[in-house]
Amino acid sequence: MKPLYKALGLRLVRAKRVSRIAMLVVAIGPATACAQANAQPDPCLYGFEWLHKVRFPLQPDPHAAYSYIAPQLPTDGTPVGFLVEGDYPYSAWFSWTMYGAHAQAVSVMSDKATVPDPGSVNPFIIGNRVMEPKRHYRMLLLPNGATVGSSLADIPNKLTIPTDVATSLLAYRVYQAFPGYNLGGAGGATHTPFPAIYAVNYKTGEKLSCSAYNAIPASVGHLPTDTPPLENLYGTNPPPDARKSADHSAHATATPQTQSPIPPKWQYAPVIDPTLVTFTRPPLLPGADVSSIPPPDQCAGYLGAGLNPNKIAIIRIPQVPTVFDTLTLNEQTVFPDTQGAYYSLVMYGASVGTYAPGEPITTALADTELKPDATGGSTIVVWPRDLPNTEREELFAYARAQGWALLRNGEAGALTSANMLIRLKGASASYYGAYTPLPGARTGVPCYFNDKPNGTLWSALEGASDPMTYVASFQNLGNAAPQGVECTSTADVLNGACLGRLQDYIHRTGGKYSNPGSQPPPSVASQK
Image 1 (cartoon, one colour):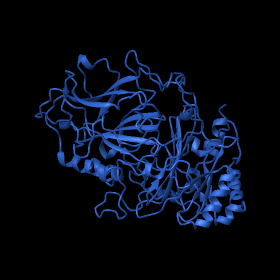
Image 2: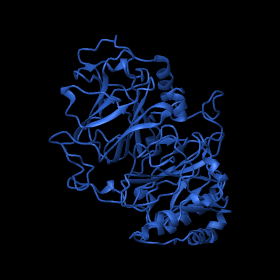
Image 3: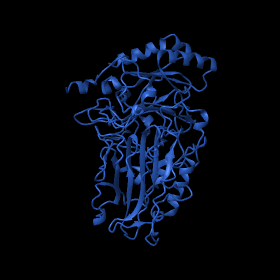
Image 4: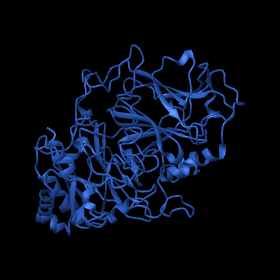
């Protein structure tokens, strides 16, 4: 069986700090019960992946914080599980996901599904105050089939630890932390602690020394009281030196390792029409964030497209999903009934991209950074890194005059093309524009990989009999569909010709460039 670190690929192996975690995960081997518990055991060490700079598509969105532990169950039958003690984060969305063999998700707990402790409130439930001070919850991580003792029996939240691998992985993802809080939704004016995870004897409730059962070692791990010193930049326009601080996962080297488990062009997006920017759903990858177990299908829950790194592209989203606006909070704000909790566009590729809110060089846009216009739509200009300075200034001035957002393009390399990923977190069950299928509610964007072998490359979609069937358009997402075109030159943008081709493309596939309000795809509209 392939070791977990190999299955996770770039997320672990190619990030310097986390790669040391991965290598030691394999070296340590299964835990044994001979390690004696301390009088007051410390919580488990985390591996943090909190970034303002990103490169490969498996790295996080810069608006998010990813944190990990690597459970190792003993081989002698000792009843070891893990207890999460935490306060709900001050954020728009969060989840806990357990990964097993081949880094496939086996258990997931999302924010709204998490039951609070007695006397506490889940602030992610629609209508509950998001600044609610009493917000504690507990969760157990247990081997499949385990029965807990009486001291832990009242904990309703549970995730399953797989028993068919020596080492598994628990991922804690937090998106769009509130202003004033760290990237993980902790700290802030309330001094909210980051969740602590303890190894426990699930029969007696006794806390154990986590170092015996967590493959993340002290050389790279951190206690929950030692979170990365990364500021939450959303809603700010920070000076450049604020982005030079400690990204807690370094970027991959330019040359892939000789024995890399990742195949060449592993994240090359399909080129369906080189004149268009076509958004499709990639296949499920190791370590993928999933909305349910089992996942709705064999595709990722986000959209992606490969862009020509040497050209300007214009992308239009006729109706941006309504999301939780975290920039207008007060003590009485309640969690809103919106189409989603969070929405973003992020450029990845073979070179490092920096999240720089308010600047054209940014590699990420989320929520209000998309600059929705009066109709609720957003237009984004993606510009190449080698664009001459004079043309840059002309393009930037033109885009700003139109009220369009700006995003710097990525680069192509041996492993990945210049990819844009679009994430929608916490989509409402009634939202027609979400990407994954939901029986009776929406079809989502069709998945090409449902009947394909594991490991099939994303670019294999080029071989479909009609690849445009799998592209986001009005036909499957209504006016929420992102669509784009590649421009031939800066002049092509400035004279309006490129925009005209984009409008034609949207109209040709059933939509409208300006399309306000609720306009579901035909398949959903016919059910009304």
